[in-house]
Image 1 (cartoon, rainbow, N blue to C red):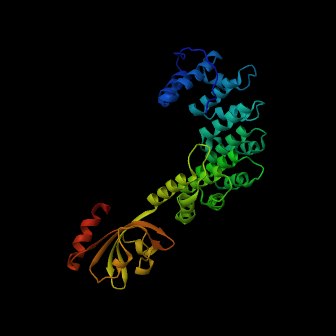
Image 2: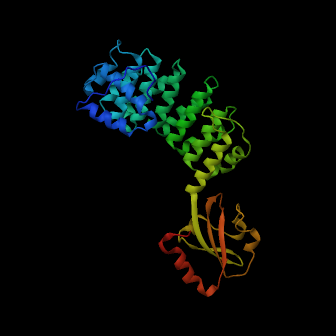
Image 3: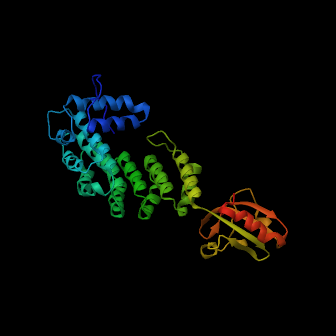
Length: 340
């Protein structure tokens, strides 16, 4: 994020090299932010930045204003050149907190293996005296890290001396990691005293997408009146997380309802991971009542739902038909893999 500063109106340099690329980057930015970004980039021109090497040296010039150096770090991250990592690492130790935060954000925005060497430096920033720097550090750890970083971020979340803003940012970073190893700390965070932490825990679990947390998320969706820093309700985010999990976990099955239960017939592999009998088919929708399963043979059930704890949820349709037409009907319904 580029920090706001006062700028003189001036056109961006009409020169080849990095300015051609920066103008392309500017044109791709949402229109609501273009004027602000253009004004920030003008400061790079006023500071004498013409080539990529000038950007690299910008962080070594104490005479350059802090906001201009922050803009330079943003530009380095967008130009996506591994030569910029060294300048970002230097800036992580700058006396100005805004520059340290901008450097951490830039490393996070750069992403990928190209900046993995920065992880030890970023972890050291978790002890920084400035909250904005610690928040930027956990953001970067979420974009650059892997499973080992789960433990680092979990310690931030559990730190009783850390601010709720930083703890919430650490939970959000766990969402970026999308690691199953993060689920235990995220489950605990669903009942954290801080609404900020609970909000981002719900968001993170929705991103990871495990159905095992649906019950805990439902409790937040039904009764959490907390509000996050961004103005959104915890309950609303929990409901959206549930919707995301359900949409990604959806499975489809065609089954024949027999007197002893359901016999799945499509897809072929479904029986290996789920055995949907009368006792294990649980309704969560009003589309079909449980009593409809207690019927004679010759009922085709087209079930759309998700598997959770050995049960199949969300039965969406059941149709009575002539048993002799089973093969023909199944072939028609499964053609192209579309059951809708």
